[in-house]
Image 1 (cartoon, rainbow, N blue to C red):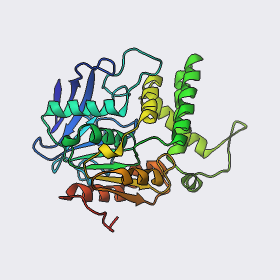
Image 2 (tube, helix red, strand yellow; image 1 turned 120 degrees about the vertical axis):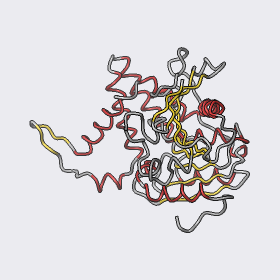
Image 3 (cartoon, rainbow, N blue to C red; image 1 turned 180 degrees about the vertical axis):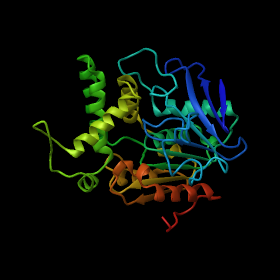
Image 4 (cartoon, rainbow, N blue to C red; image 1 turned 45 degrees about the vertical axis):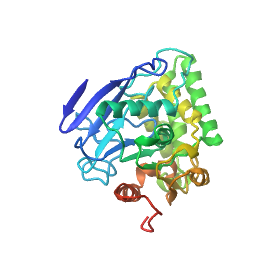
Length: 332
């Protein structure tokens, strides 16, 4: 099924023979069919509507991808997908263990099915951030001939043990809450905890006052209200199962960098504790082709790919315009 809306296509692709993972992948395609194709994927809460949906709701990467952004439909054909097993329209495992296994390899194969359906033999680029960068690495290792260049932000070839430990705690919170019949509350708390790992203490120091706000005799804090709001927003889209599947997928991720042949640019953030720059550098050293790393200075930590729009847009514009990716420009 394909629905065309103002130059965009929204549809689903069946996954033949993969009932263990899911039955279909939902996608969105923006821009001319003959333009250079670019897949854009973000974190586990991102979705296929990277340039906006049919109701006019903006995409999840404003100022970076979309009309009049550094990566715009028109010059490029931009493709997004909903993750298998996630909160979007793609299907996930219908049965199996408490947390079914869906890997970044599975997600990469799902994107390949979408490209086959759209008649795209080779991508001009893959632009992936966080989990989307992990999936991009898996795609580059599995489907070598389908990718011209790879640009990833805040992602590496494996999960850092500290990041895995923190996500394990988040999944346990959801599990305990679900056992008590309070899954939504547990999921909101897990998201609140996750938000503290996406950002930095420096940002919170500048953003929030530490003086309590007294309401009906009880102390509350500005940071507390912010985190609660983030948790409430998250549970409107996700349930505990979808969160657990993608959270576990992050921790199962492992790609041999030696299999990624496409020229690869990896953007790290100096304050990112989930994907520290040294881990990115370790991966880049093992890439067999043209690999390079660009480091962004930011107080936003892992979420810098969402917040540092000027720097991120500059990198995207430069990398996608290169004929042959080479050494990083000093303009960054």
